[in-house]
Length: 240
Image (tube, rainbow, N blue to C red):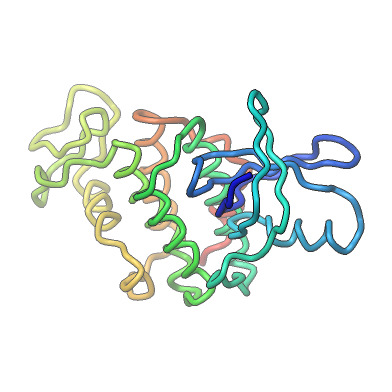
């Protein structure tokens, strides 16, 4: 038995009585939690806590040789606030989908956990303008923890971005996995996003989706393909 602090990522129905919640935990990294799928008040309360990016904690019951744990005394993490808007719910769904994919088989990482818990806890206080850019910030900054952060020291105006080599070049590389100078500036913009300036960065839906396409192409080269995320078409359409 162990106190566990979690961020819910994905829920799938396991049987008539049980669902399995994939979560990121401070203590053990990625874990799977069995949850009662019944219709009672307690089952509904737990499911509400474990919506995408829901922050919850409790006592994990781990058994040697078993991949799925059960939790008791499940409760909302202190300081966590729900995202009030429909836009926020879509962003949460997309980011939970993204994290469930890129954090496969990841062990516990204190610095990564500090980043995720801090940023996700702030979502409930963000304006809609900030929320529209929040997923771009998280995806870019996750590159640091995954070891695929671009080399910004090689940037200068007018340079190309070689996505294979993760650096800027004075001339286009001899392959197609690159960004021309106009799109290459977007990499620098992504690197400068933080919680304090999210609401000041005004982007059109076209610009936002162009940035998203660039970073998803970059992840496909260096970590994992994200083009099949079920929530991707929704997040492309919602921002105006």
